Length: 489
Image (cartoon, rainbow, N blue to C red; front, side, top):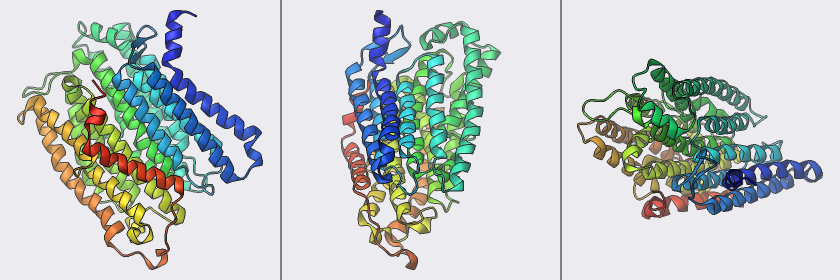
C-alpha cells in the first residue's frame, strides 16, 4: 500500500470505527433486533454504539500526535487528539441518556445517526483542507438535522428539524461560496498554502467578500448572533439528548475548526485588537462576539422556558468562545478548548436532567422544575452543579474556563484595547447571566412542588450514572484544571 494512503488509513481509524459501528447497529437491528422488545432493541443499539465510540477513542489515542497525515490534509496534534476524545466523550454521554422507548420509535437509527454526527465532529477536529472541512461540517450538520426532528410524537420536534435544516442549508451555501472564492484567489485548498498566498493578496475585495461569507456561515453553525434565529426553537423542540449533542460536541469541534481555519489559514489577514484595530477578520469577530454576549444574555432574562433559557445562554457563550478564538492566536488554543469542553459537559448534564424529568411528565416551563429537590434529590444536586458551572461559579470548571479566556483577552491588549473591552463586557454579561441561572435553581431547590407533580421521579440507572459522572468531572476539572490544560500545546 502507498505510504500516503497507509498514513491516511491510520489517521482515519477513529472515523472508520464510528462508521462501522453505525452499520453494525443497523445490521443487528435489522436481522436480530426486530424480534426483541423495544427496550431490548434500545439497549443493544446503545451498547454497540458505546463500543464503537470506545474503539474510536482507542484508535485516536493510537494515532497520537504524529504531525501531518496524507500530505497535510489532516493534522494529528494535541488539539486534534483532545478534541476527538472530547467529542467522543460527549457523544457517549448523549447515547447513555438516550430517550425512553415510548419516545424513541427507531432506536437503532437514532444511535446510527449519533455515530455519523460524531464522525463529522472527529473529522472536523483534525482537518486542515477546505474540501474535507466542508464535508466534515455537512456530515455532522445533516445528522443533527435528523436528530432534531427525531421525536415523532411532538410537532415541535418536526418544526425544529425543519428550521434547523433550512437555516443550515443557507449557511452551507454561504460557506461553500466563501470557500470557492478563497480557492479562486489563492489556487489552493490547504490551510497552510492559503496563508502563504494571502500574504501577497491582502486588500482584495473578493477576499473581504469571502471572509464575510465564511464568518456568516460559521456564525450560523455556532449559533452566534445575529445568526442565531434557529437556536431557541431547535433547543426547545428537539429531543433532549439531541439538543445536548447540538449544544456540546458540535461547539467543541466547530470552534477547533475555527481556530485552525482562521489562524492557520487566514492568519495573514487577521487584523489587530489594539487601540487602532487593523483591517482584517478580527474586527468582524469582535462585533459578532459583542452582539452575541449582549443579545444572548439579555434575551434570556425574558424567557420562561428552561430550554429557551439554555438556548439564549448558548448564544451568550458563543460570544465568549469567539473571544477565545481571538486569544488563541497568541496564547494557544488550550483555554478555548477547556472552555468549550467544560461548557459541553455542563450542557449535556443540564439536558440530561431535563430528559429524566420529561420521562415523568413535562419539563418546558420553569415551573415544571418546581420542587425538584423533593421529587429527586439526586437530580436537584446534579442540576445545581451544572447550572453553577454554566454561570461560572468557582470552584467548578465553568469558572476556570471563563477565567482563562477573559484573563488572556485582557493580557492581549490591556484594558484600553479592543479585546480588553470585550472581556470586560463578557464579565458584565456573566453577572447578568447569573440572574436567569438562579431562576432555574430557585424553582428546583426553593419552590415547593406543584400539587399535580409531587410524585417522586425514578431516575434510570444509566441516566443516574451519566449525571453523577458529568457532575464529578465538572468538580474535578474545576479543582484540577491542569489535568486538561497541560495536554494541549
